[in-house]
Image (cartoon, rainbow, N blue to C red):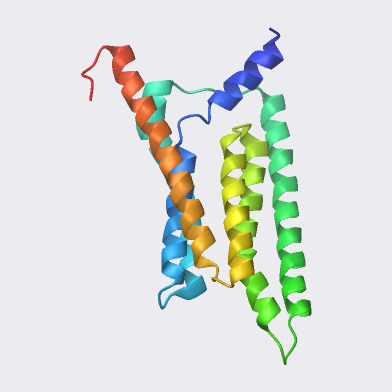
Amino acid sequence: MTQAQVESDLFRSYWDDGLLDLLSGLALLVAGVGWNTDLGALAAIQMPLWVTLWIPLRKQIVEPRAGYVVFAQSRRTRNTHKLAWSLALGLGLFVLLAAAAVVIGTPNDTGAANRLVSGLPGALVALAAVVANALTGARRFLGYALVLAVVATVAILLDLGPALPLALGGLVAASGGAVLLTRLVRESRAYDGGPQP
């Protein structure tokens, strides 16, 4: 196995703690539940705040158990470029989907546009999950993207509103993250010879 392969495997395993899944899932769940309250679309404003907790919680919970890794400069540069392209792609897709929703809807008939808007937030988050897979190599994000895309499609077809895809996708991601993080904590206790839960 070459050094590049070892580093690639290490990079993928770096994300196996589930903390990013848990925080992103909780953000989506709160946004989905909040969407059905008086907050409406403003419920999505809290989403980036959850992700900002990732670094301090990783240092507090994950790194003492899994260790800390500094990747090669070439990998960090590749990741920076991938992130920039991903953000540009996400912004472009958002503009296209928003424009499509406006064009499809007419002043006399906004039903089609409303149905598309029902799935728009879920579709955008599904794209973000695909991007997370590309950035981290963690294939489970493709599963989250599939759940979001399917529920967003159902929301469009049945005109259920945007809350359901966000809440259900968030519940799936948070549950997956909780399982992975619990496994990490349990296994680290067993490795250290500490008390078992």
